[in-house]
Length: 409
Image (cartoon, rainbow, N blue to C red; front, top):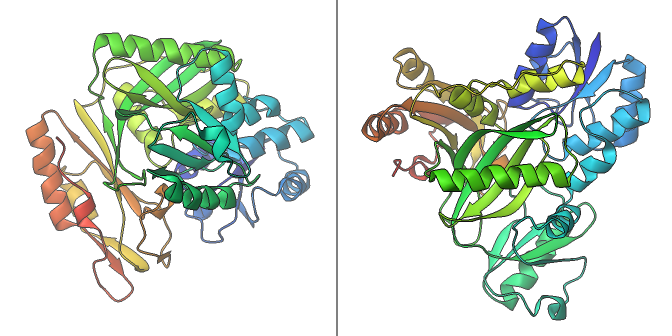
């Protein structure tokens, strides 16, 4: 068998390895010729993976048995469309994929099905009359982008106009959503839907870099601090979403805001969270979401069994840098050998040019996992790690933003 894998990031390395363990030849397509998953693939194509015609041509020429990805937001839509065109298997049809990938369509379904979400307006051109009922602060974001690209918090009309212009430029269909800002803690809920039932796998905090108007994640923290009642409400909303969108067998990620008693849904997608989330899920409940996606695509029904977490605290920290050309990570291997650091993963290839900006999740250079059974143990490990690791540029300078990795509170 042969599969076409779209996107060449960290999760796709695990995906390719899973495919090859089953005797499936892995053809990888990515727009970056230095994609970190490239060395693991059997065949590689440098191509704009959002170019449907180009992807269809590759799939036909390679005579693949299926097209696949995992943990990738907008790529889900491409896989669904290509699979539908070619009559290949995939866990979600193109029409449903559009509804779960476009924030305008998504919000419409939320409102129609009484799923809690903030008041909002979607526009291609800013019309102040349309948002006169909305209260500042407001959130502005492209309807079809990901990784927090173009997401801004605004306090007045001047900031709104600037943010709206940026968001519509980023959006592929030039639309932006303007919604009321919800005060509370952001949580990330990863789910696997089996025969229509939404099984909650992992509920974690999405901690953001402290910035007045941006929302860039620097940490995924398990477990979330939540009461049993709040967990029950999360499960109810998860099932509401699965029912409303007709999801039967698929992974699902919901981003919510909670005040400790209630939840409001920011957005969701029929996929697992990106970067290292698949590792966090496996360590927190024992479920392998990448394997499950391969199972679904190959016609095998995954068994959803949730186990006890490996440790009380399981945390993914993400590393950002100052401007420079990335050369290598230093000090990480030694800490893994000592058992202080669970693992680490570069998210960008050697030679990658770093702008020094922290505007979206795409600006991360690497991620690492830290586990502990007490808060004190975690912070002791964390401080030692932050003090002893480096991200070196081509001139040997440490460009790591150590200051963006605070202790756990």
